[in-house]
Image 1 (cartoon, rainbow, N blue to C red):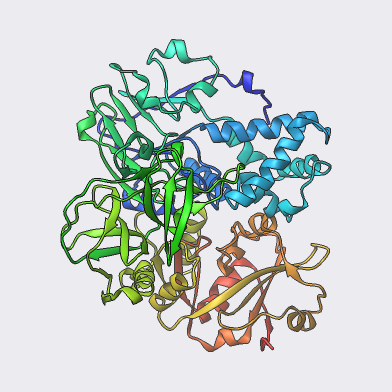
Image 2: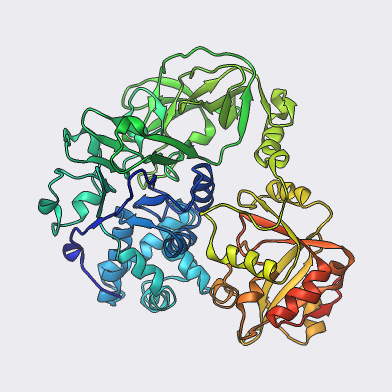
Length: 597
């Protein structure tokens, strides 16, 4: 891996060759939100004729930074995908480099890395390095100044390819009349930018308000959430400054409570800004407004520049607070209040008490329900309170006391999940490993059906997928190993049955079974946590993994599993698994009888 200090990270520029009329799809600031990225690419109808451009900050502040990096690397191998560096990637890689160079537990750089790992676990719940450590079986709670260099050396060994990918990103990219940079640039003179220190163009706060104008390029930037450019409203939509040819696209994904991942569609590299369209994806449930509502301006708008408040009173799921700087009193949902800074003062997340315009029948993103009202995002991206009635998809009109349950049902999109026969015909957002599953099944003349969905990471979402798979046995797939990490097992059992380690150990003669680390899962099966499936055995060419099947799985005609990714599921006959698939991939199962008692 090339090692560079911050002063040596100089600006590199990559030119993207685009055909006339070739569509450019642009995303920025994904921040570890893999499902949002996958679902956004679906909404963009990402196909083989498109060029995908990602303008920095793949990682941190979200739950799946490592999976995002691996997913994007996968897309880069298949399609024309261009990724620039973000300030978060630069900071984290430099933090790692400096700590490893120092090595001394008492060195400031080493302590800063340890402090960051613990801080990110507490504040964000995850970070790239934490996920890498987890994959090799190390918890952040184990990390100290005395052992961090040893463990991070293992991280560098196991994830050299991912780290090299991040280190090698260009700082600026151009395509026709467009310049893409994470933070912002002071000039469009590329000769003046190339070779200069990169950090000034990666962490360039409030770029749009610095007075720059451009004539040669339209500059597309991320980094600074568009929420922050709008003092009079909460709105994360892309910001088009046509006069100065600046397009800001960071929708606050992972950073703002109401954040979204924006996707920009440029119809050609020489298209005008007026020809650009966009869409977005967030994880909020969608409801239908039943009543009209007129727009009302905000009485209070809190942004993170000035968010310190004093608690006055609590009233159910709402609270009365006072903004310390202005003395303004207002009501806010309790969920917006937190002690997130080191000074331990009470702070209010970005919040606006405006009422957006709403038309009857309009689809709204439901951010939360509180105080008998709905905090929503309308068709224009404007956020505020809606005081009318709503209905969830296929749920009918919802009385206030049942709305949370009804909205969760709507969020699973059970009614919209459609099982389709055979392999999907489109979808450049699909990973190589998923496509390889479909290719093998068709080669083996195995009939199957598939369904695409959001990450099935809640019980409600899983239930919706299960319902769509019909009478198929829904399997629990567990990746196990012995204490010495010399024997690995993939266990298939009915999803509603409890797993008891001792019961299985006795039947296969392997004591002290435990869940195997994700790094082995990826190495042997080419599968990440959450996507474990018998389909991964096609990648286990050295037969390192022994398949175990609970006999109750055999009672059904069909079973359901993931095609090595958890944003799709497939339905296959059990007989085809046993008679065609397993012989073809060279794995003979051991059958077990599990009671779960």
